[in-house]
Amino acid sequence: MKSAILALLVCSAAAFSPAKVAKQSTDLSAGNPQFANELGVISPTGYWDPIGLSKNADQETFDRWRLTELKHGRVAMLAVVGYCVQEFARFPGDIDLHGTAFADVPNGLAALSAVPSLGWLQIFFLVGAVDIRGFLGDFDIGKPELDAETLAKRQLQELQHGRLAMLGIMELLRHDAVNLINPGEDGLEGLITGLPFL
Image 1 (cartoon, rainbow, N blue to C red):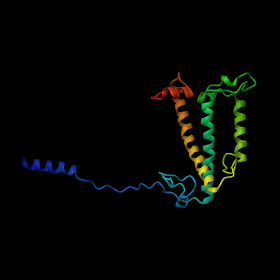
Image 2: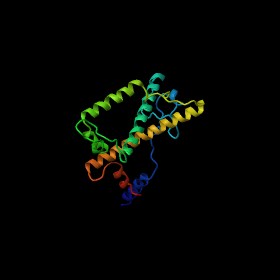
Image 3: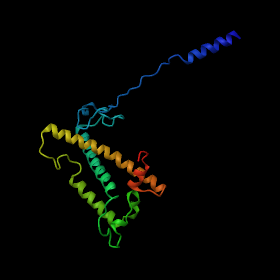
Image 4: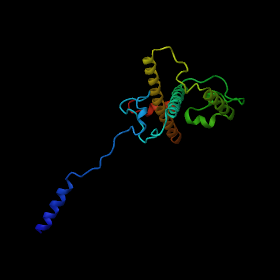
């Protein structure tokens, strides 16, 4: 009996003893350290490449990735603005030759099935023309005459705004997809009424 009690006490004491834990790296900059001082590296993450995509990348590849990020950020900023504006204003007139008015096209994801084929064709060619000309992926387009420090600050702000807009449009689309599944509220109206503090 005493042996059993002693064994239980030893086992219970062992349960509370500190265990050896393998050290894990918390370094988020597993990629190429040569890019650690590039535009867009901000605190608190620093150079953020957790899975090491840039480990073997050269400067040309990194520059292409940065311009792609800039382009996606600019498109996302336009998308967020467009998503909000469509709740308050519409173009006058018709979107096609069959009399479908701009005002008849629903907001958000529901518009995907309502836009006629000719409308999608126009969107496709417009986006292609803008992309081929390089307007969206170039810091030099519309660059004002500023000193180097101010220009770098504004370019960083544009990257940050684009990153935020990419997250923002994904949330707006996610919210809209939920509302398509649960009809009754759509677009910005559903987002505003869904906020607990409003």
